[in-house]
Image 1 (tube, rainbow, N blue to C red):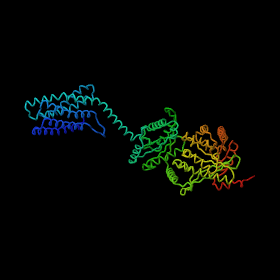
Image 2: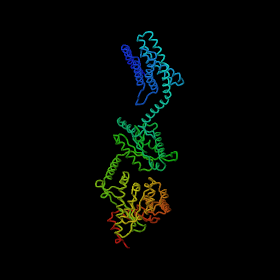
Image 3: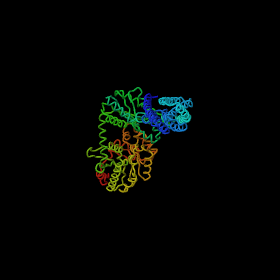
Image 4: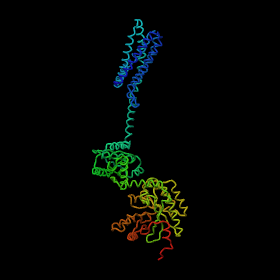
Length: 635
């Protein structure tokens, strides 16, 4: 039993003892009627019982501390007023002259009921202990009340009547108190389970405040707190941002349960890798993790991450699949790379995205020029959000030809951006950023509008029919109303659906696979031409050709250059062309830059050619003049 509680209890008993003595003396002096005296003493002992309850129930953050105090409190709380009522009845029968006997009877009854309760629950050690404490309370109160009783001088006949009154109240009070205690004890175990569950939930809530629920690793809040502490202590450390490659594809293909298994498996590998190292790791959200190495040199960190990458190269066996886990890792060091928390986090994030450009698991250390590239990227994002499409963005058209013929059959629309401050910005730089911030869907519609307008003007000027090839991204295909806008624009400029060829990259198809394929099938049904651009850059090219029916397959520059290298490379190119022919798709060779490449390609079964050697991208007025039939060399 808590010693402080015990002292508080004694203090309250002493206070009420003095008050009871005062009431007894005053009531005898004023000749107050007996029933009123009994009621007064019943009320006072009820208040005393309530104070006992107040002392017995301990609140720690609003949670009840121990069930045994509840047992004591309920019994004491009910015992006081019941004893008062019984005393009124007994005093009426025996005409007793002292109201304090009612309170005494109640206390004695509670003590006896406590003892009886111990007997009934002798096989329950916890209950026996609880009731023992309760009986000690009762005995203490009995001693005080008996002492008060003997302090008041009474005649012998009154003593006899008093004794009879006490004896008359004991059985009823004992029975009632025993029933109450028994009912409380019956639910004691349930109360203990409830309290234990509350404590468990509280501990779990405190754990989840600083730890990730899925992996058990420290969460973002915990990681940031630890980083702030390291910086405040001027402790040198390396921080690594990690992002799982193609995790979204795993989620979409195999479901979130498998995705969760991948996250847990990666978290376990991180934890194992830190064994014996001064550092810690955490999950900051989604498929992003953080690892911190404290007091290590760059050479030591390089060795650590090289070993960690090797552990990811094995095949992991999950519940339904076996897979490899690839991660892109960006590493920055405090204080060399940055001196505050926001900058060091930004540096690690920047270099992580640089690492993602390498296929498969890889890591890179931060370098100063990366921050400059990041700042430019931020500026491009800002200007893309506020740019005027009509005045800043325009298209150039690059012709493509039937192999062996220099009369163009169509043009590819190439988007260009000339910003008033940044100047000419490369499409390879701004297009991925536009896609990442959600601007490319509207920018793509601007390209469709300008492309159809330009082809319409060329056809009118040359009195010829041309095709137009337009690069199309996943965000465009999945944007609301894309097909309707495309059809309306074609009709607006008097073109046919079959004249429009939509260039799709492998990366576009592998994103949100089912939705993309469904939209492409819809477009083909509407007689649009669908081409696979830069065939062979990714690893899934042959699988894509097998799953989708492409009207055209465009071979990228890397394969075209094979045509002028050694005999083995030429055989590889020939094999690729033969493979594409199996699927009955037309073939376009892109990136032809010189006569040798053109002649070598011409000897293969290539349908169309495109590149700087055959024709540069140019604006509409230049193309109208250059390919005007009146200027063609009839020889």
